[in-house]
Amino acid sequence: MIEIMRTNDPVVISFVESLLRDSGIAHFIADSNMSVVEGSLGVLARRVMVDSEREREARQLLKDAGVEQELRD
Image (cartoon, rainbow, N blue to C red; front, side):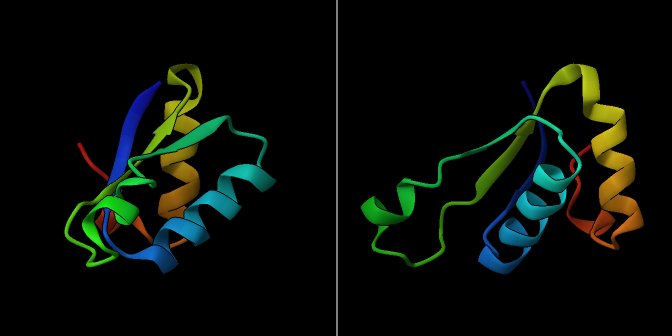
């Protein structure tokens, strides 16, 4: 799996996760349990990981959805 996005915004994470799930792109939200440790302050960013074979497709999907500013290079 490869990281395509890192953000503290729970709304963006939820939106991205929904898009990926609906498109059938395997994904994983890394560090989501760290919010419990940090006390839900939003200091630690969550990482969106996708299957490397579908990275290009996932990136295009997120660009088309208007969240390209959140994508990592």
